Image (cartoon, rainbow, N blue to C red; front, side, top):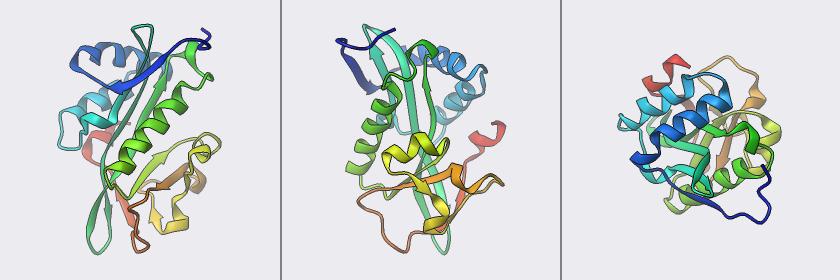
Length: 175
């Protein structure tokens, strides 16, 4: 599929999109874990409807991104965002759909005075959006993983003393 000369629409999900979103995630990841995660987050207090976005092309959903609340725990708990999952139909990958979803989500988050976004992902992809290894800002991963894949994107309301250990809600336990 070639996206040239076609209008990609990025918009918040609606209940009518749920089945298509599950299909996009299942095909992109080759498993159902991410679709199950999305359902668990939607049914929790961690869900943010305006930050669950679809990419639509010619009335078909071809991509999806979800940002949801997680905790950054130190002397005080701070709610920050997790970016997970990001999925694009295999035939629509490497054409800017994922980048459009990330850019729109970060713009919305920045306008809501959220201090930062956490992602566990490919450094080469997420560095394009300003994500950096989280340890640079004394933000610890709850997982034993290579330090370069646990990243943070500072937004305009970030304050220098914002640090701690990330705690994911129980919805993430089955991944």
